[in-house]
Length: 153
Image (cartoon, rainbow, N blue to C red; front, side, top):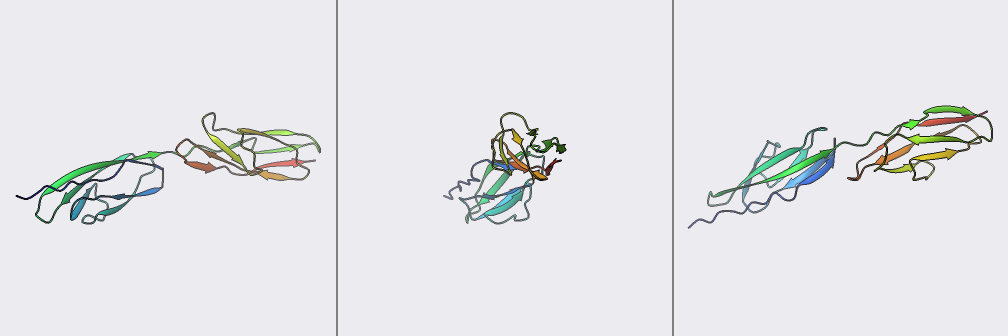
């Protein structure tokens, strides 16, 4: 009696938009992935996720006896947070302080180019200075802002 293979496509994955993940199936001799990944008869398929699409992949595995089993795995795509600084450019009097704020909101982590880790920072530059902020969400997706410039007069 021919035994059915037990195909396992692995755990679901969460990736940032534009990133890729490798899906690996086990339990059979040959594999076919749907939607097609370009590697239709191998146990490994590199899947590049679309920037806005969560996709469920089905792998059909066949053993040496021609018996077939299937499994699915879902790749969840998460958007990177928006990272902008307000104001993006400002001029202040020498010795004055201004506040720069990242616009992403609560629930994110922040790392400023000066090492601060809060949503807003107070700066008192002694020359023209530029600042950036990297904003990360709970899944680890991150975006770095364009530079904000603070000039003292």
